[in-house]
Length: 609
Image 1 (tube, rainbow, N blue to C red):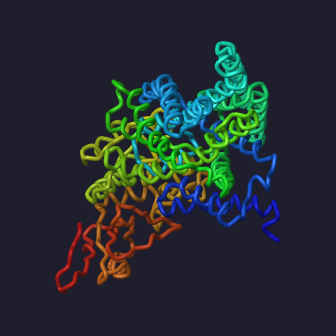
Image 2 (cartoon, rainbow, N blue to C red):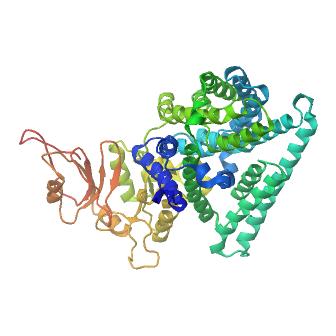
Image 3 (cartoon, rainbow, N blue to C red):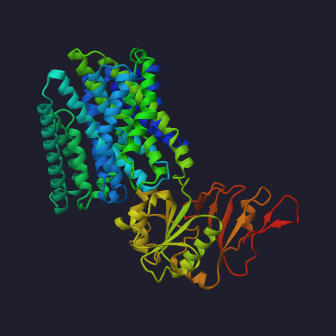
């Protein structure tokens, strides 16, 4: 049978994982929830995938190595500049929140789930982990402040190895004799191995960031060598002490993220793409491992524990940790609710559950269904409520509707003023304070600086703009903006004016604005000749064809504004679909009659200027 082939199953896992992420993007639903449901559907329900049967002994190392790469990529995103606003909350959540969360989760597992104290303490340590594999996909569709985003991101990545080490400590304590064990000796062993793992990660990070810029590694080998180095570092540390490899890869990523590295953007992009694939695959695998026997072990008393975890443990941990902090109370409440668990928690729990069961510890087998219960409950509770709660607290600014125009001149100022009149947020960016003067007079928000400067980007979330228009008088700079920012925010969300010489080496690397592909010089010339912007509402009786018919031949349609505030620009390669209810924006010659919009009863007409 075709599905009996392991190669087909591997392809199916990739297809299901990436397909679930794509559907989540199209439907604006939490990707982690859809991946979880897809894995359960393909696994225990339809029986298409049985990871334990299909992969056998390879299952555990596959998941562990995937988690290592995911954590390394998370470390690559931990730039210390992010801590300018989030540093205080992150420090509190690690120093105060980790031990407090451990104690509260242990108490909830002991009293709520009825686990033995040893198992409850180990599971409480694992639950310190919130997990970047679920936090970052959950936050991706939200338009919240960088402080909240960075706080949750840093907490998730830093606490991952901390939770794993707490589990290692408890496991060592249990296996070395429980109450009669020497806690000080065990603690010293765990801390010493953690220190060695941290030094290994820092050393590898410094080695990579020293070798790469000096030409010791060719460009085409940088990404493969980095990937192999991450895996080797993780394995070496894990051999010394189980789970300390998570410390190694996290610190290695942080070191590289904060060191100058010529190829850092290309490497980071490669790691992000790889991480998306790994997260998708591992989520499908882990959820497919559920079987009816495991799910039948989920007991009614576990519901009490899940309730305590969601509504007591996480909120109390965060609110106590952030007490008297500089973070506004609305943001504290949001952080206090968001605490989903994912791959790392399930993988570590499954590993220690098997070891404890082999050691003869009672209740150890209950950890597997309970860990999946935690994952399912937190993913669905937080995944489907995050947007609603952020909106109710007023920290989600809603769909990205603002536009960033790079280049301050007469044409971009007129364009910005037209968009502002349509209730679209506009920011005009330019390094010259003098050039921004007219934009300020027009009441537009301005950004003095280089949009490609990383420090300037810390103050402006480029992901918060629905579109970026590069319209400076420097064709090469316009192309560079599209080349640099396109992969970050989406190539369909960046446009540039045409180069003065279309066949020049600096030919456009982004969409060329306007159907006619006018250059900046041509646009400025027309602006000086009193050309202006016009807006026209498209209706059932005055359709797009009527609008185009009444436009002068030399006029240019610029963009279409949808009722939901989406702004779609015309380009040389794309023409947006225009429907009734849309507003068409055009750039027209002087003394051109404004296109009229038909209404229900002629001869009346609505004219928008």
